Length: 224
Image (cartoon, rainbow, N blue to C red; front, side, top):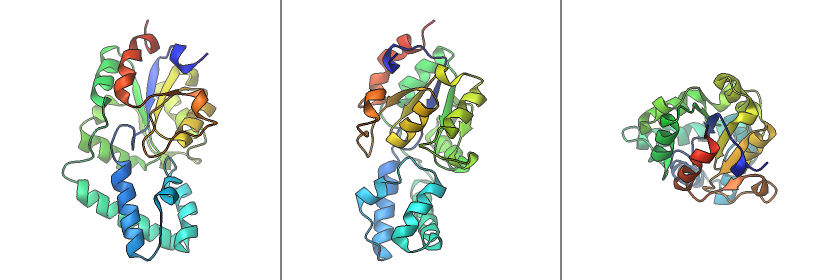
């Protein structure tokens, strides 16, 4: 049965690039600071990390920066610049986020976050954006042994929601995330941000250009 025709009891959301318009500012910081350090990181290079947790990103970045320690220092520098820039105002919400969350709340649908970003930072970013109260539970990539594209983070969200994985609908922007959700047995709505969906993943998801388009599906996805 396709995602569009299934019924669900809970919703699970990625954060960066899906709820928050954060991927581009973070990418810009990586490219700018890497160039200043003499590393010619390209947008295509950076996008290989999108959707992965910090540990997996560091393993990949170590090859470009010469060592895990150098990659870790760059990670900290990027984190510091992004935090300073967005500390007071937070990241902008992506189109359609608030109407969708409100529609789910009105129907009593429990919503979780399953983000590859570290848990503490997820809480900070959702709080700054003013939407943290829409979610319970909230999980980050440092809370599981294996990050996306493995299913562990989504399985954790389902357990925390006290729902079967097959009863959860995941909203993602990355193919890594979609792959993990599919492996967990969940339905997937994919709203691409920085990257087009992988051709082996796209046919198994419902592809939307914006969360605005998801609102019309809510009665059929989460109906009685």
